[in-house]
Length: 182
Image (tube, rainbow, N blue to C red; front, side, top):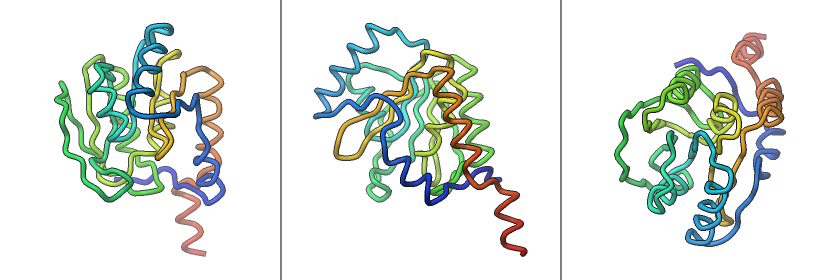
């Protein structure tokens, strides 16, 4: 496992803001609005990041082509996997980082049409960025906004450019290693 990006304090604050459309409300309300969006927009792919939002999408028959989960809710309560997938991939991705294996698994899953689950040992949140970067345009990347609802990111060239800027602002591995040796 190679850490490629590490979250900075400045970006940690920025990432608390929704990166797309915030849909507030109960699970039933947010899923109803999500169904309307899917019917209207007909995204080529739906990607979910996070256990609760992924489970709720599946429970409401909105089946993401890719789910990225860590089987935890708010980093401590274990959530068992309920939904079967055509392919399941396990990756390591420590909290506050993005690893090369997580990037590769996400990119590979999005290049295929198989219903895939990526199960993360660590934290999946930042993989939202990687999903936006590699998903086809007009796809939806959906993640939970704790205690509020969920966020739907419609993948556009502008969103991809924003992701690239975020990744440039993160501390790449080389900078971290140089800092430690100086």
